[in-house]
Length: 335
Ligand code: NDP
Image (cartoon, rainbow, N blue to C red; front, side, top):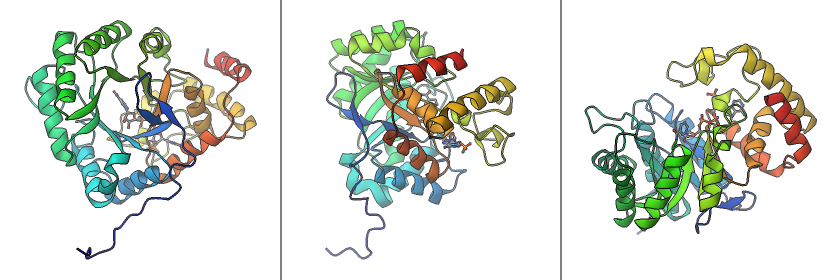
């Protein structure tokens, strides 16, 4: 049958030429060194054409991995709806070239099953996510946060069930402390659905994974995809002269609040930016390169509000990596 209209999108032919693809722990899966998250700027409050442009430019640059969660929006769920629309209109023919993840665990719906880590809430949420995106399966399904009140066997059992039923190809956990992660790895191994990936927050300003988590992941051969590598934009030059109107900190729906833009942070970023300048890169590129120095980090998971930010992030991969001397100088500044 001859299509009535020409396809609206043809991906760049050279999309796999410059991106680095990194093996995720000891698994068979490779992830792009830079992945794109849809936490902000893909909700029903945001402009669809900008969201679409960002997703398609990312794919053209070799970003094969798009990270979602049930509650991304606002309104909650709407980032998955937006991504479902981009899939339906543009990316569906390339489904086998995409790694799509979603998560459940934070407050999504009303009542006792609308959050946390029960089998009930996780599996219901996964079905809802698949429905919103129009997908038969996601590549990675995460428990979004550790639930101290639910037996870990139950939460991991739900992830393993998702894998065994083909609704997810791999299991992931996010924001789990090191000891719970170790136990999750053991349980999922036993259940025949090995943990692929941990998703912790990690940046020059938030270094918690260095206190044990990276060791657990390296020991077990589990990958790490680190989120908010720019500390939601703080690790760019955008806040050096105040809070711009079009920044996340200025937006009512943004998770970065004005009081997080402190004098101390701005002063640190000013000093870091000098190093970035000497290296011939932007502050954002220095902050991203800094996450890439750790061998445990499979992928650096960025957010973006415009296409240019994605291009800037990917361009970092063509710049020289940080050497030990530079890392030591940066450590001095970071304290
Ligand atoms: P980042 O730290 O990369 O922050 C992204 C924001 O920084 C952009 O939206 C933009 O905000 C600003 N920015 C990006 N590039 C530049 C630039 N070159 N110059 C100036 N400003 C720039 O990541 P996010 O905090 O957005 O998180 C990334 C992803 O991680 C999320 O989408 C989500 O997938 C995941 N995540 C997971 C969590 C979890 O619990 N598992 C929690 C949080 C995030 P603006 O222009 O609007 O100011």
